[in-house]
Length: 174
Length: 289
Image (cartoon, rainbow over all chains, first blue to last red; front, side, top):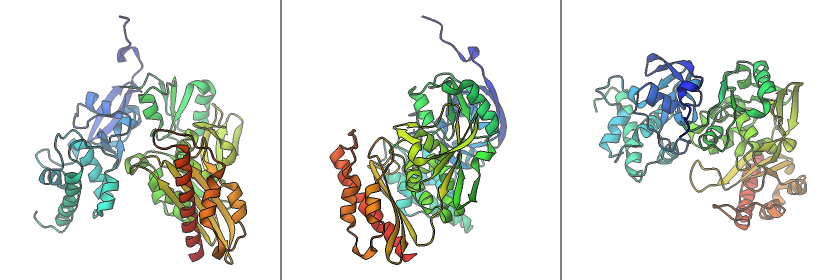
């Protein structure tokens, strides 16, 4: 077997970024995708990789507050950005956000593999449009694939999350 | 980690970018939004030696009015096309096609210049550039030049851009009062590339069509214009138009290829119907304006 090149043989680049509110530095090969950087170098495995070519939405994260597919960015491109992964959505690791609570309540997941991508997507969606119509919900989640639920529970979860956020906004306990 | 290794450059000015391209030209690929290029890298359909990331060049993301045109910087993202009030006011067709591009996560990254340089004949923005007779401004070793959209798209994924050139901005002529714009698409799923798409831009004056432009996506190797139909409709009274026939005529000379989604005859039938619909909606909007 010929020896395959490893990252030690290739140029790596140092990248500084903020991840879930913490300043981090990593050294990565330029070809390393941001999702792999997050999972392997930053050791945050909540972000899931599935198709790795921008089709399934599993690896959705927030970069500077905008939802993006982290398999279509390279780690080096994250220099100077604010990255939020599913681990950083709730302010406290023992709490769930309204979106996360709604997914649990409404059976918005079965195997759970796609769920981090959905939760991040729906968080961004409701940020832009806090009271989406059913059509807007379906359009909003169309970039994320789920092979278990048939989406009904997910659509219900988005509606419920919208209610929970509105109730929180009014200061009501839910 | 799926892409093959490459050297990475992130220039901070057009001049710096051109210097990298001058050195690596044929071996280099520009990385803009990456929503088409990075999948191709992951699948190793593309294996450039050098990737030149243009996302850190501020001068590429400006939007301004200049001499009757809206000048949109190459790295303007689809999400900006969708939401920016200046774009919606000066070039409604750009704002209106934007929601049809991919999913919102893709629109947060994908760029105007990237879409044009990628030259997918199924994509919306190349068709908008064709319909509005946009000019693509490119910078190269001998300065800048402007390429008319009609001469920019050569065939599938191929433009007249040279290896040492960079798309810097796109000039979209601003249409005056009494204009209307429409986009109609047929896609299997929300966010997919449309199997066929039709774009219409019209200007109505004194009850007549003063100006007509019709574009089609997914109907050939480049975004198509239905120029014969445009000529036939120009000057016609809005009250006496046969737009069903206009749709049929618009696709008459085209020879779309077959793929897993649709054969050529089906594409032409859908294309004709979509052109009729787009023209109807654009004329209705123009007549109201």
